[in-house]
Amino acid sequence: MIDTLLRQWTLLQLIPRHPRRIDPARLKARLDGMGLAVTLRTVQRDLNALALTFPLEATPGRPQGWCWCPGARQMDIPSMDPHAALTFHLVEQHLQPLLPPTTLADLAPWFEAARGVVAAEVSRVTQWQHKVRVVARTLTKLPPAIDPAIQASLYEGLLQDRQVEVSYRALATGGETKTYPVHPLGLVVMEQVLYLVCTVRDYPDPRYLALHRIVGAQVLDQPARRPPGFDLDAFIAREFGIRRGEAPLKLVLRVRGILAAYLAETPLAKGQKIQPLADNWHAVQVKVPDTQQLRNWLFSLGADAVVMAPESLREELRQGLTQAAAQYAIQD
Image (tube, rainbow, N blue to C red):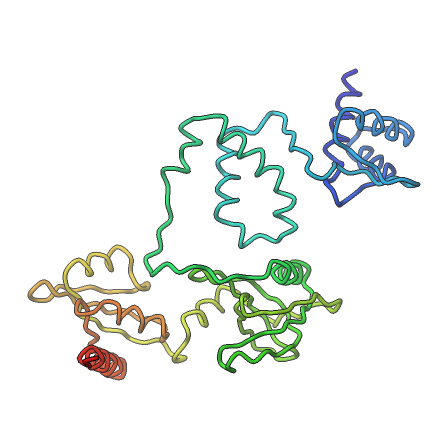
């Protein structure tokens, strides 16, 4: 009796969810590999018996392909506890844009089970979702719409390391659409926008495309090529700040008020130095990448920060602020 229960429970665990299927011969081989030696006839008899109680289905003909029915509820022994339910709830809430559609489909039963636990079991754990928030320091914008079918094709190409033919509408070309094959390398989320890091055609230099500007995508049979030594983190650090120069800048700032305390807690980079000056001002010295992101941040500080060096950056900000002040002086 115990052997039968163990075998049948293991068999249920080995059966995949729709639309994937597995035939009795492969199930027998897996059971044998787990030390549960059994005949093919016994496996077939177990499957037919289990299908009377559990939501299982088989394709007609031989060999049969077995799977859990579409929409079958997830069965866990022991059942999902509040900690696991909270984790699945947060994954569903915050990570959906990052997960391949096939993964989301596989996780759907766990998401449904988690919602049931969260709704039915009021505890300190399940109440955690009401006590935690993620807040962006930058202006929050509505994310651009992405065609789900296009997103699924791009994720499949990235997941399977295959080329994808895309039709892309670049802002720089006035919205003109161009079609070409790309080699997916990675996915980046920045300020509610999804970007595909890739190489184009036979060019070796990686670039990035905004997913919402891709108006067509088809996965190709050809394998994707990865540039030798490509590092996604290094690419992000180099390109997503919108690089303005190759060499880093030796930045010297005068900052006042609470800004100095903030920079002491969260330095701009390793090696940053802060020294007090007169009248509640501080001098900040740090080596940082030369990016547009840096300039945007400096402009956002307004009168609380003054660039002292390098002189070229100081002059660039001076001209930008002068032009902005002039625009506000214009009368309608």
